[in-house]
Length: 224
Image (cartoon, rainbow, N blue to C red; front, side):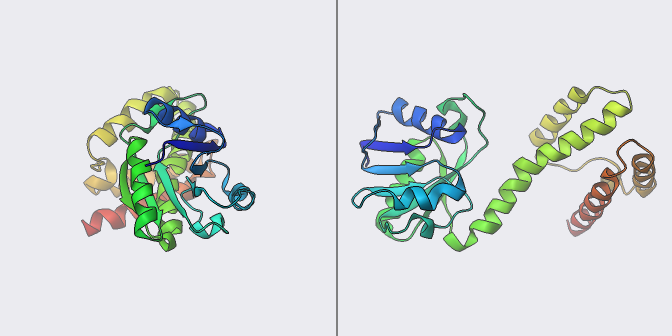
């Protein structure tokens, strides 16, 4: 559908996207029929406004509405629901999902084409639902980093290696996020001991996070 694509911005996502497009026979050029903006969210409006009329314009942001691409009307977005590492290639897109947002059938067809060309499993996302969608994505990826760092701080203080948590995380995912542990067993006495131990640790600031997560986990478990 697009033989020539300009990838604007070569950070973590942009580099992987450019690599994948080239792998799949799309010419990555400066004057493409599609200008794909892989720049920070705060720069999308400025970069889009600097593009002259004619080409299709799209962005890969999960949170930014299509209006940021004004004045262009031939526009859409594809957000790869994935986290990228510096220097990684197009293989990082394999198996990931991609949110396609468009305002008409013509734009939707192009967004779906791009998602599939990148190797994504596409799904449609309404523009007005972006904040809620992106909040969920942030919890799943960004706050997982926070949770791991917090857990690592506690286990290393106890004398255990932080890397011992990684197989536990991987098995939790492989088991389909099936809840185990004291809350699943209804063992609230152990939960209380956890809270006491954290309060007297070198990281008492983690106590509030633990309590909030424990309460939420209890409510979710009770609702199942």
